Length: 112
Length: 114
Image (cartoon, rainbow over all chains, first blue to last red; front, side, top):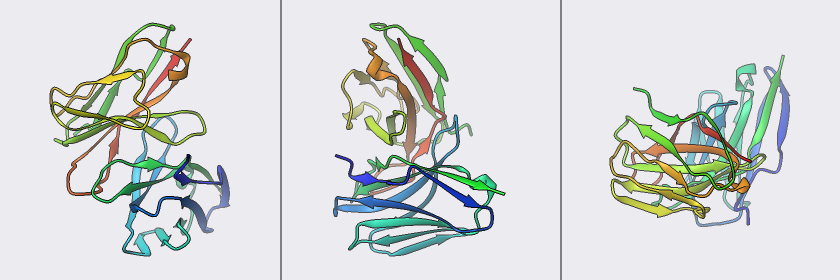
């Protein structure tokens, strides 16, 4: 049973445009959500996170939106750059625990 | 500061062989984790440790063992390799305690069992 779902396995966006990556979850007890970015042959690296008490968190070109009623979060990248081409994983955790549950990932390709 | 290092980078095993995947972190993190990633899938937690001498099972622990004798090291042991254990293995660490915290990942070990 996949508790964190990324239904789009891939996304292709032109450089300079907005990239929107989506993530849905099924367990309303999740308290904290994170996005990780992964390049080939490397481990995932932390990108941005959001607590369930917020609905938006911004860090430079990256913004994460959380809609608790819909159990949905999204990552916006504006403007997209070729270096953003990677696999993006959404992850969630329960209150007061460090264990993460990952989605299956979305491969983003940013073309010139 | 090397972060999280993993050895080996690649390994091919025959069915029934055993091996240990090494993981070391130099950030003085309390918590350490082992994940596996199968093709087209997300990362699944195998085992984790909240400190030296303390380990616990994650989502997919069968076929694996771990130990944590020091803060820095968290090896993962495969006793009887099976084709289903063909995967990429990632070790991670975090400061730990008091709620969610950023996990820092190693570069991974790609294991093939034939």
